[in-house]
Length: 164
Image (cartoon, rainbow, N blue to C red):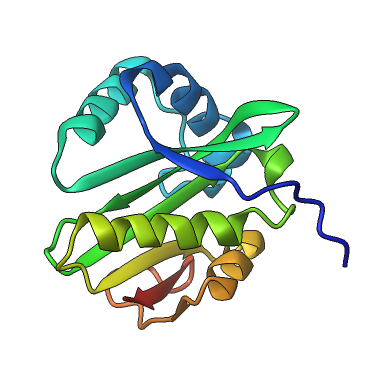
């Protein structure tokens, strides 16, 4: 299989200026279908979420950029670390960049940033809808393995684990 990538994606910390991009991406029909809530997010709710993400000690929100003739925002990634040693990863990419081999390096880079950001972090969980085959494949390639789904509906989600 031919690798279509020109370079690995780059992560940077999100800022308030990324708000419109994040909301547009989150409300893309493909993203809504794959999200846990499966609903459109309105501006007020999004702004409250973004303010929390940018100021909280328990969240690390990053913009994914890719160089393809110019620097383009192609998605975002975050780790929520509600417990000292366990975080939860979310990766969202524009549909036109999915299936191009970018997911695995993004996931690996986000995990690395999470382990650096929180020295006591031991595990990162990924909660993935079962029908999201691309994400399941990318997380598996990134070293995540199946974990026992204790608190999520096993008919709808797969819980995967990445130890440090």
